[in-house]
Image (cartoon, rainbow, N blue to C red; front, side):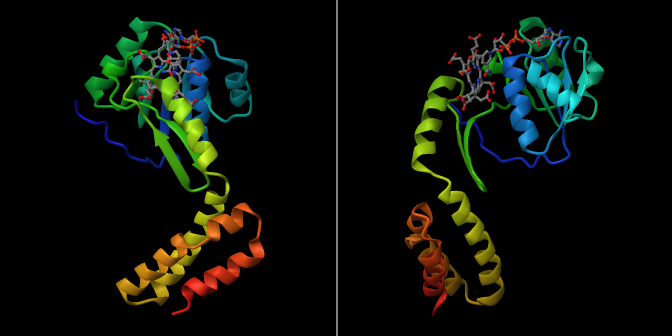
Length: 210
Ligand SMILES: C[C@@]1(CC(=O)O)c2cc3[nH]c(cc4nc(cc5[nH]c(cc(n2)[C@H]1CCC(=O)O)[C@@](C)(CC(=O)O)[C@@H]5CCC(=O)O)C(CC(=O)O)=C4CCC(=O)O)c(CCC(=O)O)c3CC(=O)O
Ligand SMILES: NC(=O)C1=CN([C@@H]2O[C@H](COP(=O)(O)OP(=O)(O)OC[C@H]3O[C@@H](n4cnc5c(N)ncnc54)[C@H](O)[C@@H]3O)[C@@H](O)[C@H]2O)C=CC1
């Protein structure tokens, strides 16, 4: 069995097509919008929330059945109707155009699938079961969410800032890596978790001192 290859796409300003407007389409659209994608939805009927996003001009709604020209300019395509025949047609059209396609009712014919995700600011932890059990993926996501609290988002903001500074100021690679190691092995995460922000700066200074 070959593995699925995980990547993190930047979707800002990229056109993503979602065909279908039900509960499953809504979940896919919600996460695409969070990632800054430009979303085109094609569906005769949509959920109230998709309708609301349309009224707020957060997406483009084509309120009718799928047509092949809906694929024009798409970067990613999601076939999320409840009609297997329609979904299969979309897969075929995408294969002809070499477009990446996610089908919600046919894992075998997807060329990408959507994982279950925990986000803490810059940290994303994605879980996939290669289609075997999305419900287990969601359970693992909930377990990870308990283990990785909001302090990880805060810590990564600090690390992102420091990293720029250290890359600029510290010439020796070994010395840089020593500092990064000290930072991640420190108790800064615990201090953030316990809201002891006062001590965080002290700890950072200690890690930076040579
Ligand atoms: C292949 C894949 C394609 C894709 O959609 O990308 C796919 C396919 C299918 N899902 C089905 C069912 C359910 N899917 C969910 C939920 C999620 N499904 C997601 C992803 C994926 N689902 C991809 C593989 C992911 C992996 O490899 O693990 C998640 C992670 C991400 C997301 O959708 O955003 C999201 C959880 C988000 C979260 O909570 O974190 C639930 C639970 C619920 O709805 O609460 C159920 C009902 C329970 C059950 O059946 O397990 C069915 C059968 C439909 C039927 O019965 O007709 C198929 C088709 C089939 O298996 O043939
Ligand atoms: N991948 C996943 O995570 C999951 C997948 N599923 C599968 O996804 C399918 C969809 O599930 P729901 O969103 O709950 O269904 P739903 O019945 O709520 O929505 C179906 C949507 O498809 C639209 N539609 C139907 N024909 C169309 C056409 N020709 N062109 C464009 N849009 C069309 C309808 O207007 C409707 O908005 C299910 O039939 C099931 O097979 C179900 C649960 C989870």
